[in-house]
Length: 520
View 1 (spheres, helix red, strand yellow):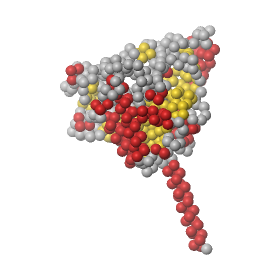
View 2 (tube, one colour):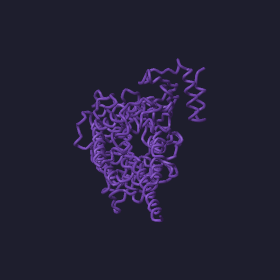
View 3 (cartoon, one colour):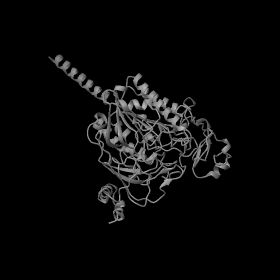
View 4 (cartoon, one colour):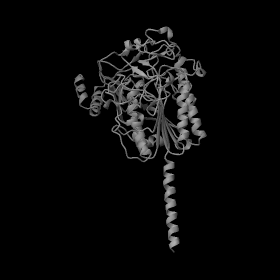
């Protein structure tokens, strides 16, 4: 009798153990594929442009393609902050594009990788970071980071177990990779020095810059990019040393892809989260020579083709490792498109009939739709049925949606749980959304968008993009006017007042005075 009881207890423990292991095993791997400056019309599945992106299209056509998917900002750093924290970036006072600044995510803040770690996930980021490094004095562009020591805090201090990144962007120094806080291949006898303000100091070293040595460049700068020349490309900022650690621009896509594949293979036996943060098609556009001329649109088009190929290779890895059936993939972009963003690279001249913005108004840096309405795709083989959604969804919603998906209880301030919308294409999306560009904000509710008055140029001359600045309110009905050509603020004052009231409710007292600007 005693032996029988012991046997039954043993069986119960075995069954409990199996149930626990099955539960952990069934947690899906999660991959966010994040492109850089990819427009609404740059993905051929959206039927707006003339570029061909077959691998991204596979995700779109076999998953859910969102026609009203938004990034959290029209520029890089704020959009990444909003995605990872689930909070609007305008809540982070003064958050703009970072150049050599300190970490903007507080190490006490909850992030997507942090919440996933509570459920047993291994977490990794490969590619562009652009959320600052180190604590420093918080002054963006001060060049205070010591790249010769362990760099902290950074991705590893906000939830990532593994990080292999570029600090900011490909067009900014330092032009080196950083893995888990240490510069890769750094020779201690050739220390790195970086600054963003002191060209005279750089000149004292006798090092070439795009401003003073244009004959040494292989890519001509248009605006802003006239600092240190590395691999023939003039950059933003000045760098000395670190010769053995310098990256190869033309091999960057292959490099990040290889690191991502290594990460997947190393962690395939447990649930993992990979933030695959591509640099394409951000400037400088340096596709590998095997992609040159492929698009017929110059380096920008070729870089998108290269990115699409990279995504296809990542997909093949998941397939070959038998991981597709248990991997949830989100594909999107950090903001809308820009053509000339600092270099002469034929992006404008060779555009042809292609429309990166997909017929939307504006682009990167803009409060108009093309600034933040971006490609947004959810894919999970065998779990998500092919479909299209016109519901409004934002990257700020991914935090809460992923939390619910894995059975966590964390909720962000500004996100919604759209796990059913992402997985089953069921339920309503957002009714309202704050749109952000360089700390300026606008408001979408239903089919209506309201942009408050802002000082500043209507068009950024450097990039030739309408910014959404005006002395008057702007009001558009996107259902009837998706290109935002007809400002209805005068003839629909009732709707304008309604929109302003809702906008102020979210934005707070700082914007309460805009109600006084309405003409009675």
